[in-house]
Amino acid sequence: MKPRPLGYARPQSVTEALAALAVPDVEAKVLAGGQSLVPLMSLRLAAPDLLVDINRLSELSYVAVADGQVRVGALARHADVLASEAAAAAQPLLRKALRFVAHPAIRNRGTTVGSIVHADPAGEMPAVLALLAGTVVVASTAGRRSIPASEFFLGPLESAVQPGELATEVQFPVLSGPAAGTGFSEVSRRRGDYAVCGVAAIAWLGADGRIGGAKAAYLSVAPSPVVLDLTEAVAARPADDVLFPAAASLVRARLEPESDIHATAGYRRQLAGVLTERALVEALAQAREAVTA
Amino acid sequence: MSPPDELHRVEMRGAKLHGEELHEVRLIVNGAARTAHVPARRLLSDCIRHDLRLTGTHVGCEHGVCGACTILLDGAPVRSCLLLAVSADGAAITTIEGLAEPDGALSPVQQAFSECHGLQCGFCTPGFLTTVTAGLRAVPDPDDEQAREMIAGNLCRCTGYQNILASVHRAAEITRDRPSRVASREAAATPAGPA
Image (cartoon, rainbow over all chains, first blue to last red; front, top):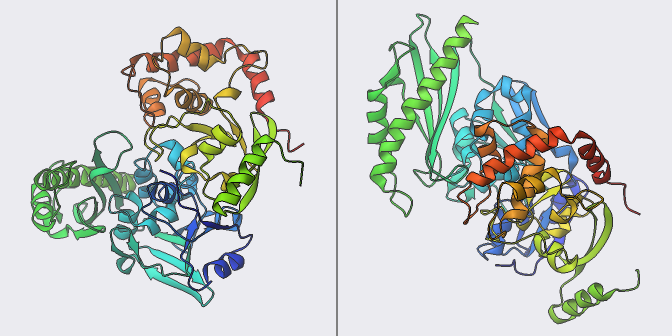
């Protein structure tokens, strides 16, 4: 239950961090919040040669809204993003989902960018990034590149970040349009535990005030976040509906969850439908408020 | 380098055995400047218990689930088993040993847990006390839901939580009734910087 011996570097700048990550034949891991990495090391499921501790790179601790994106730096803690009024106003789904990320003591240390790079299939923020079609910016000594969410999550605990690269920023598109809303719902065995199933949803109204369309992203039902377009099941229905049996059926038909010690596949599929309806109700309520405001 | 004290020597002996590089870690611990020399893999919980010899911080699951090892890092509750000591270099931490008043009187949270029987075996208690101490600073007058949310990240196998919830409410009451003492505790907890 203790990490294996390892090397440690504490760069004072992004340039220094990239140089430390670029050393050949050294398996290096970036240490930010460490709320997933440290237990993995303690359990000896991860045993890097070198930790590159980016906790001194205060230039990466920002949460900013610019150019239609909520930009979250690699050192912004979950608690920082949760507390940001600007981020909550620009993309309300961030705060709605972050409230389900572990416990306050974990959110005080863990970073939003780190949880996305960690790519846990049960993670809330990977699903949010996938739903919003956001972007991850990574840097290396070779330069910078932007990776769209659709190409970022490769499998369980596997992201598109390559050896030598540092994810410096995640960009969540702001909620656009005058008649859109978001919702988040999940079920876990105990509060703050990994979700048995979770849903992030976005819905928008048409010009006639009825539902224009909706999308949802799912966690804990597949090796990486799954995004489903629900428009065909909800379009043109009244925006104050509280039951969406067609959407729930569509979701249950499309998802292929697996059984584990926490839940059977059948229960997960059932949950996915129910939680979709709840998230849609929340999203539509926000969309209606946006219209009347 | 300062003359090696006993703890330091133990560390150096370990380094020879395992060939691990040691890193100097400076911490303000309950208001006092402390230094430890630790390998990079040393968990902060182990640094607190083994290097600093403050065994009030308890280690339960050692992977972030139980909350027993919760301490305050620069005032905010964190799991000390999920931090590497070397990464906390320069921080001010508060452990269970730092909660009582300067004169040794119980803090409002400690007194409330005592009055309401908010503990039985006591293993999880250090984590609850630090968590609730920070929680009441953020939410001084919690309702039932907020009190539950405050302690949701800490496991207790004895009490069934009801008396812990009562303790949270009682601690809020005591804090309101003892403003002067709380003020003096806050002043004492403010880091004075490395000596």
